[in-house]
Structure formats: structure tokens, C-alpha cells
Amino acid sequence: MAATITPSEDGQVLEIEVTGTLTRQDYDVFVPVIETQMRQGKVKLLVSMRDFTGWEIGALWEDIKFDIKHFRDIERLALVGDKKWEEGMAWFCKPFTTATIAYFDQSQIETARSWIRGA
Image (cartoon, rainbow, N blue to C red; front, side, top):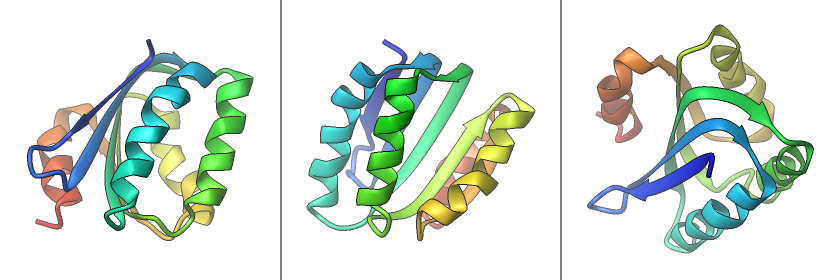
């Protein structure tokens, strides 16, 4: 699997780690977890990308559908990566959500965890 999702102990943040190439099946795993949390209110997502190479076409379509459906349901989005193009994703995502978005290098993951909580 290219993606794993871990809720924080207090349930305020969902941390998603992606590696390799995301598939449509990955979305079948983590989207229901995110949508369950969204029933409680807006969510905060931290997406950690390690050796991430992108999306299969089916996964990209799932991502677009998710973004449209949940345009206003994400409060904060922290993208944590290790490649220059991943930093550009923070800028690319802005039209698809009302979330506050920030990018962090993998070496700053603890800073990202503090930021996502609003600290």
C-alpha cells in the first residue's frame, strides 16, 4: 500500500503517510476514515510524502472528486515532503480548498505537527 492513515490520540488531526505511487485502492482505504472524521466537523490533515512519485490516473480522479466534494471540510492542510515539486503542491492545492495550507520539509515534521494544531 502506498498510503497509511493515523488519527492523533485526541482525534484532532489525521496524519497520512504516502510513499511510492498512490492508487485508487489507497483512496478506498483512507477516504472513509477522513469522511467519518468530517462528520464531527472540519478536519486537519498532515500529509507526509516519502519517496512519493505521484498518482495513478484512477487515483488522480479520486483525488479531484474528493477535493470538489470536501472543498470546505478541511481546516488546515500540512504537506510534508522531500522533493521540490511537492512544495509546489501547496500552491497548486489552494484553489481546491478553503483550508489554510503550508509546506514543510521532512526535517521539519515536528514543526508541521505543531502548526497543524494551530500552535
